[in-house]
Image (cartoon, rainbow over all chains, first blue to last red; front, top):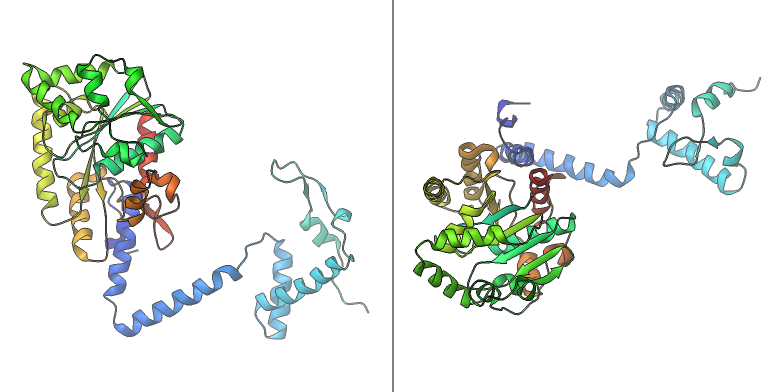
Length: 130
Length: 258
């Protein structure tokens, strides 16, 4: 972050936030037209993506496995994860997956049940059948 | 203990009434018991809350009526003493008294024990405005970010300092500048806000953007919390960051009150 974007320490934090955002905007306005266009394009792209993005917590091994498959298939991680999820969702809707088999009571005040994904991941055999 | 908040600026049309009504209701919604007193002869507090103007302040001060008969419940937790053109007579009457300003300050201190007492003042450095400034624990100065605003504000700050010196009274919790009707479509308001921030630091609160819904709400006799609670005047967002609005100012006042 450049000096211009550093908030002054004795300002109201929300006012400092405003001035920081305004500084960013002013810097953007000072960019050459081509760079500004690029920036706008990126911003539009990010805005379009917003409703299509999700953040889930998964076991690291599971994430790596999806990445390995995507690498092998020369596709993006999102597309592989999406396809596999679609298969699993269809199975779930058709009654082939029953959450009750996996879940256990949760101590969280927000949720009643949990699934120990790490345990499940460790215990399942993902190797192809000989 | 009651905290007295006064909204003052000798300039008219800077958002004193809008801010005092909005913040009075905002604080009441946070569970504070609030009494809002209209010291402006225009009586716009009444209209903004859906009442007809009336001579509440005059009756209380000079007709010897009990507070119970002049105060009105505007919303849950928010009571008001309304004003009309007779408020100007209050001013004239107090001026005739030898120590009118002190009479009013004494009156203010005798008002019932609420959590917050708010004074909306007239747009002139009149006796009533001076009294409200003297009685204030928190002084809020709404300012429009326009040419000469900073200069005018410096002048006002000097007057305030002098006034307090004369009456040996300081706003216990400080004086705050509330940038109102803020527009960032041209560079001048932004530049003015920067100058204010550089001069007064933390005394400058985050800005309230210009928002037509504030006017519409007043015309409908509703507060902005009722009329358009998600509008920019309540939550001012920029690039998905909260950068101002009355919601933030209620937070600042709650920090002082609790």
